[in-house]
Amino acid sequence: MPYELHRISSSPSCINPLQQADVIPVLPVLTLPNNRYKRLIQRIGRFFIHSPANEMKTVIIKYNAGNVQSVRYALERIGASYLWTDDEAEIRTADKVIFPGVGEASTAMAYLREKGLDRVIPTLTQPVLGTCVGMQLMCRFSEENNTQALGIFPVDVKRFPSGSLKVPHVGWNNLYDLKSPLTNELTENPFVYFVHSYAAPVNEYTVASCEYVVPFSAMLHKDNFYAAQFHAEISGKEGQTILENFLAL
Image (tube, rainbow, N blue to C red; front, side):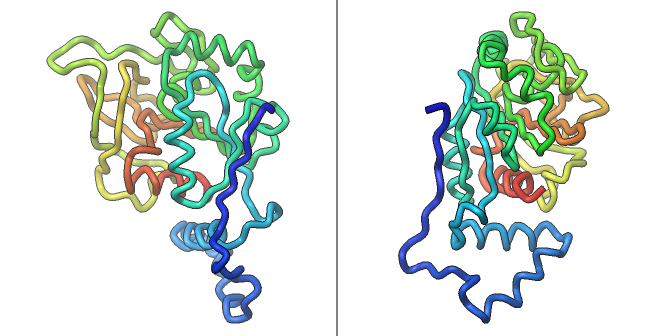
């Protein structure tokens, strides 16, 4: 099987709100632009409405550098169903695509090329979120083993220079200069969790910055492609908000 289907099931005591007349007046809130209302209604829907026709199709790209288990748990915590797959048809027909990553860039790119995903990912038209190595592979080039990457962002990923701080950058650090719809409703200068030795410099596609030895891009955005150098799936409440904002796009 090229993919796995995971759907969050409800307790038998749960009631489908669409079957209750007194809930129907709440549904027009979906038309409001405010992300808080959209996320609230989506969260209610994910926990109570489980018909496949009513569920968003979210795909986690399956490859050899995915921190898949933590991403799965994060999606399950917010009641989101997902497919874990490397099947092109499933990826192309998804509503949202998550491209996670932990590992080494050249090995990961070799696997993507073997599966043909190097030509699939840059041509996707739905919202795509890359995290950690996933973000680095969405760039043009990585200094890690001189890796030619996907080229979605025309940016080169560089190793942190040696200095007074230890490399890799591991632990909690704060974001600043937030300019992404994914960071709506975050606290000021939120803390998120990083594990990396390589980073993209601040550039025209930077929508959140961080500093460790030097300033670097914590988040990138271009068209339908979103990327985060940190691990949103293990960044507590702030990371959960980022994932919910992505699913609400």
